[in-house]
Length: 295
Image (tube, rainbow, N blue to C red):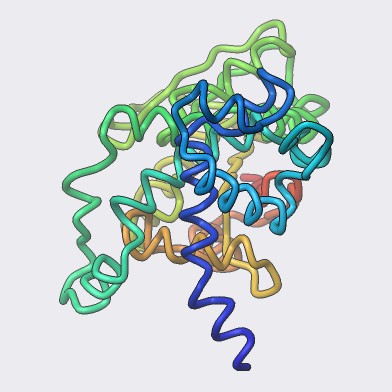
């Protein structure tokens, strides 16, 4: 227990070192010049002694290796460097703005469910970094699995509604595969309207509104589904055996949603609204659950 306590207590130092390396562009400099050595430190105006200390630490963590002529990127990390840069950009925003002891304590001590995030939101550059993570390659995988669910059971002409924060990104991918598909996109702030749909998609949205709010929204969506229509909900839900999903809980406390954090909660919500059949699939590559509800 003592080892775990120290490991958790000092974890912020690992975060600080890694984010500092990305802020310096250290990994990109190594890729550009082949290695990081005394000559490159002089050229960049970096303190050689302090650079060495940081590189020793990054080597012990498995990011670098001490090769011929200087520090080089470990081959296993180099394969992940580009997508990891996008993640670090987003996490850097969280680290400096949201995930502080003060923010978590303030959320817990608040008498309401409202957090500062609900009023402030992300700054434009932070929103861009977040969108790259949530709506980059993720939407391709989600669209692929939705396609497998709907393609055989749908007519050639399909009308699709994408609701929430993803701005029609999944629908646009479906459009490349289904020749006759009409995609409507509706954000949280917009009314649903009265159009009938064959497919309704909700991604990264279900945990932002209360159970009562979703009862109203889902009931209206069910009424808008055509016969044999499907409602697809893709989101991250908490799983007890997943360390990644445990970290998501901290995001939700300070700046994400705070509702419907278990997939079973959403299944019960759907069935309580008259949905008779719900299939669940876990997309492990992006730690996302896909719930497909049939009218």
